[in-house]
Structure formats: C-alpha cells, structure tokens
Image (tube, rainbow, N blue to C red; front, side):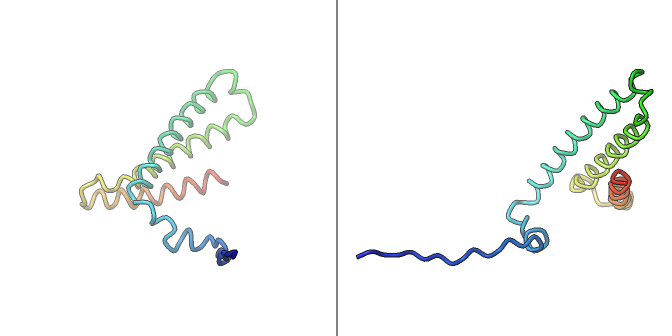
Length: 117
C-alpha cells in the first residue's frame, strides 16, 4: 500500500505583504534598529575614506571630482541623520529632541533624494 502526500501550492510572494503588512515584525525592532545603525556607521566610514581619497592633489584635476565629493558628503550627512533618527530611544522625550528627530528625518529624506539626483 503506497501513500501519496499532497501539498497545497505555495502562495505567491507579494511584496506589499512583506513590506507593509507585518513582514518585518518577525524580527524584534531592536535588532533591525541596531543593524541599521551598524550599516550606517560602515557607510559613514566608507564615505569619509572616499572623501579623503577624492581630496588628494592627483584627484582634483578630474572632471568628476566635485560631483563625487559632493555625493560622498551628501551621503555621509544622510547616514548621520538616519543614525540620529534610529537612536531616538536613547533620547529623553522633550521639546528639543522632538524637533531634532523631526529635522533629522526630514534631512535624511532630503539628502537621499539629493544623492539620487
């Protein structure tokens, strides 16, 4: 006597469910927060090294020098504002830090838009 196992077809992956309907809620928010901060710190260090390289005398005569330097500085500022926004749990809730977090979120989004343009 043979038995057959039938499985239900897998539901298709829908990105809106993953991104907006609890897809990231499987991981605790603290884990995602600290991973974001770690990636941003690595990005800040990398952008600082890139700016140091671009500011060397031999690199200054290249036509893309100004654009790449401005892009690295914009990305660095964006990452710093993202770090500030992600570490909001470390701040005592008062008026100054509420304004700081609002400005950091707005500046991070502005800098990201600037760096893609």
